[in-house]
Length: 222
Image (cartoon, rainbow, N blue to C red):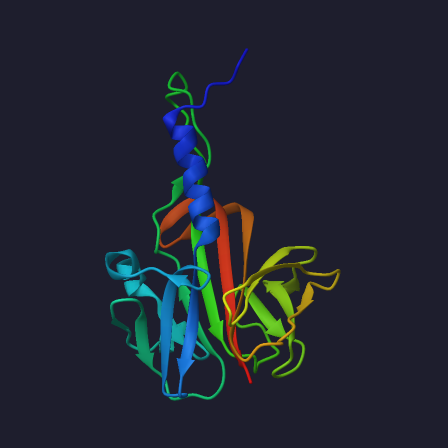
């Protein structure tokens, strides 16, 4: 019997590919302001496409001490006078989505759902993880980063590095969850990864069956 791809099936695939290509990232400006972007690496969205970032928390140590943010045409910004790392977290950018298509005749069954948590960091100062999913340098300003989930290394996992020339380099963490970024160009580097985790959770007030974690770290190479 042949399987039939329904419109919902295509929608599920489209949603998954769209999320995998999108992330948030931070860019520091003169250690007085930080800018928050959304989109594919190096290709920020604008206008209404970034309005959903309104509840993003930008902070240094604790989300409860977050800074006010302001929307602009291509980004959001916060006035943060800080030379160390700056963090951002948002968990209500997208509504939860279905992970499966439930046949009509199984009307009593609800499809499993997934929701996203997005993290971003500007800087490579702290060697301690502060959020659930994060790149942590092995020493301050090191080009060797450990990808961690709840303080444990994420081993043999895909990572994308965006260079200042907008070249995307695919890498894989080693047995220690580490990658080393070659900073051969001057400018901003964006390192990102995603990590789906199965298990019931409550994300932005929604009970879901899986969490799609997305993280990035940005830093300048001189």
